[in-house]
Length: 613
Image: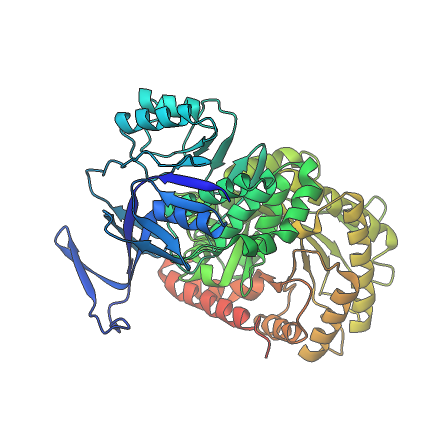
């Protein structure tokens, strides 16, 4: 059993969640009245408050749950039977104020210096965690101890307050066997664990992490403490670097304010992911990032907003409503959707057009950053439209030339997924095998380029709805197109867990006399998907493809009712979400609130259609 001595401060973190509501306040379960705090002469009401031990107690819990004998230096506290037991210890209170995604800290201006007591035995590790405020004297005493004890190793967390450039911290850094840091740190060390805002890196391996999907508030400081202690504990037990990183991600993303996970649970949680680390290790850390983002993009109960109409498409929309087609009106139109209340409750991602990705929100942020602040991932349309094959009226999608460079720029801008559409019209001689094959090859090359750039590819083969064909013909054509597409994706070694399929529903063409009922659409679509889509794919999203607003929702519900499926299934609509808002807006920003409400109602309806009935 490993013995770990933690050097750090125990804090009492009081989480206060601020409520925007003006009425309908309730007392808590103990009958306690609302807590009013006054700042700058203004009273704020907090509807939820949770007090837990933080700081070094988090590290103590993680090490203990890994089966280690852990203690905090000069602190009579233990972790026993799943509880942090604190007796007669000095704690610093921190108030953590939470409103939506915003978190603010109220901490004492005078930081309590960390106490140190020479241990009566030689621990295997001394870990100076992020909560520690190390004085020169304590640093000298710790260095003296580890230099005398040849068997004790030293791990050190360098945080914002660590003052890494002071002489006594430099000496600790030079002596440390492992450095953990969440700040800029350029000094050389044998082992450095880096914690970024969206990644954890160690030994040239990197995994992404996020708290975006969390319903509770886990603050940046507590999450970083959990990550650091988990990586250390896993390494102390001899786990490979990749496994240690995946354990840290699983622990922080599944922990809550009162508890982290046990070693046994983490080993079960990461079994599949660890296989992927090994399988794709030769392709670098971006593959894991892509696969993780694909999972986030397909998170249950939400869809994807397609706001990526090309110049020609949006021109037709505006022209039909007598709206000027200029950059300002296009920006204001997209801004309505991005500023709709509760957008993040209904969509995981938004597909942008290049112009939109470079425009600014009302607060001065670019739209990609603005959406990220709402917990919504941004994607980008990267194909450059349809052109005819030589000597043919069938079409292919252009845009592969210069695509890697454009993807690198979009990744730098913050886009984390992309979309490429191939369109197939049904006539007496199409879609031909030639058109299906060539477009599948192009889609596969695009998908491969995306994943090498760290971007999730959405591949969109669309059997165009505006045609005269039966539902039986749709079953045949869509099946052939999907078979060819997945064969080409395999040839290009595209990771299916990092790839999303956007596809038409299976229904009769718009010009067909006998139209398909929702039940027929649900059954036929489910049949085609199950027969032709591999189970390891990240997910399937449907385009509305010219269906009416109500029709798209009814057919989505019908497909949902045929589930469950091997992969998440959801919507990625443009017109079926936007049309009511466009009619309400009419190019006049005085109507923006009405347009937002019309859009929100379509979001609610389609999110509801993802629930089996």
